[in-house]
Amino acid sequence: MRKNIVAGNWKMNTTVQEGVELAKAVNARVKGTATQVVLCTPATHLTEVSKVINQPALALGAQNCADQVSGAYTGEVSVSMIKSTGASHVILGHSERRAYYGETNAILAAKTKLALAEGLTPIFCIGEVLEEREAGKHFEVVKQQLNEGLFDLSAADFGKVVLAYEPVWAIGTGKTATPEQAQEIHKVIRDHIAAKYGQPAANDCSILYGGSCKPSNAKELFANPDVDGGLIGGAALNADDFMGIVNAF
Ligand code: PEP
Image (cartoon, rainbow, N blue to C red; front, side, top):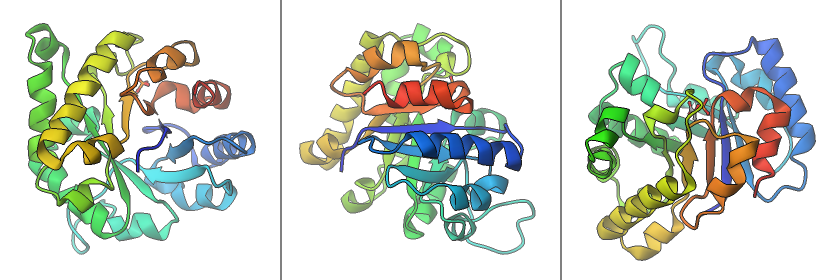
């Protein structure tokens, strides 16, 4: 079901000890919030962080998973390993994974199916690079990412996925999409979902915005009817900033 969600993507930052302190600080402050808050930590931190979070609003997620179930895949982390830490979510298709690790829509479709089969909620990222936006191709790009990455799912499985629209030109750059740009493309995404799975399914889908979201701009981004929260990178590494965004609803 559609929910307001703020997910923090810690990326490759913090030691386990620092991550535990950050998680404790967020845990102490999410009490009573109606927003679903997710901490997506490095895989090495999941087990320890799961021990220090206990608020109903707060969930734990990984940032990636293997595209295989188990076996001889040195260095990979499987969905069942992630689940066994107490995590409930996994980010898939982040633009850094797509750009630096060659993750294609086909690989991401396989990872999404494995995550869903394990009972994990995928936070599936889509978004265009600057050249694509400048060429007016951004709607086409996100539709293709949806078609190839997710639209092979049954309606029931699609209903378990959270989407994150992240314009690549806004990630870690300090440039944010304007509220109008965010609403425009979130509506295009929702309409595309409606065309595939029907309007009720589209209405039920949580679509997060990501890209230089901060306490100072979160309120106006989240005020849009088709923006259901945020996927937060840099600002998720500071409990005050992160909670400023959570409390923007
Ligand atoms: C992200 O990496 O998902 C992200 C949105 O990063 P930042 O908030 O730092 O732009």
